[in-house]
Amino acid sequence: MSAKTPTPTTKLVQADIGTDSAYGAVSPPLYLSTTYKFNGFDDMGVYDYGRGGNPNRDALGNAVAELEGGARGVVTASGMAAIDLVTNLMTADQLIVAPHDCYGGTHRLLTYRAQQGRLRVIFVDQNDGDALNDALAQKPTLVMIETPSNPLMRLVDIRAICKAAHSVGAKVVVDNTFLSPARQRPLSLGADFVLHSTTKFLNGHSDVVGGAIVSKTEEDGEALAWWANCTGVTGAPFDSFLTLRGMRTLHARMDIQERNAMAIAEFLHTHPAIEHVYYPGLKSDVGHNLMQAQQSGAGAILSFEVAGGRNAVKTLLESTTLFQLAESLGGVESLMSHPTTMTHRGMTEEARKIAGIKDNLVRISVGLESETDLIEELRNILPV
Image (cartoon, rainbow, N blue to C red; front, side, top):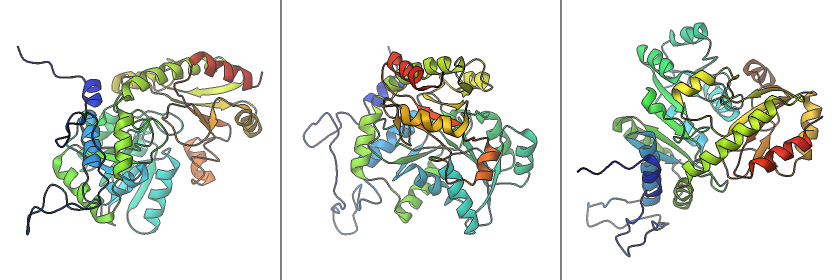
């Protein structure tokens, strides 16, 4: 009888475990060496120099690629480095179509790269069929998708956009940071690349900055690895070691964090001080049906608009002690942030307005604390 293929959870827990050939260490060793001996004259071993290759970085890249169902994973020094890396596959006259409501750092990077003449970019509402078709008619080289969007949790149809993009010769890259492969696998929906800020859910402990990009084909993976080595944006060995260590608990963390997020969303949805809750797990959310079609869960991030405007938000954020007032997301601890003055402050006021990011919007990254404690904290700090 043939052995059953292990589940993704088991594969991740076991990633690189028990592979040490020197001493039989169960946990993979940390390799900090910057350089490696050649076997002899003109005879290089597996590794030669740390920027181009490292066992810990390769172990992490392989684990992320396995989770996403891709051919190769390239590990970078940050999520932004991963986004910038994929643009190296483009020439200056080529076009990228990006979401109008993407992460502020992504919006800033693409805007200023365009101003430098490094690429051309169009920001478009990808749920507006006419606007998206008009953009695709300009024959872009790359289409970038961010779903759910940061911070409004808007969903777009990955499969449909991939099909439309491929019909005009474009490749598609999906930012899967918010959900991780524990909840969404864009390559299986037609994407050519999937990228992560591994700082977030993959690492899960708010103590490492990193990124990764997984390609569907080995050819694209080789091109990305070449550019990563050429530009020097590869991730550090210790960061890779810690990230893989954190990833082993990804599925367990996500299950608890998602349950907490659902409970908080339901509580906020009926609270009189909340004007709107953005969380696809709610049946009332505009993206709920699409979530069920392309995700295996709603994730652990939600946003909401507070009645009373900016002043009410200031009071709320300065009143909490359980939620940390901080940027980032995906850690074991719960965080609150104000996109206008924090994660999306790099966007112009007009760009934020077009994206629908209001001054009274608050984003929560839900952690592993007790659901009861989190809701009680919100009950105490929200206006009556």
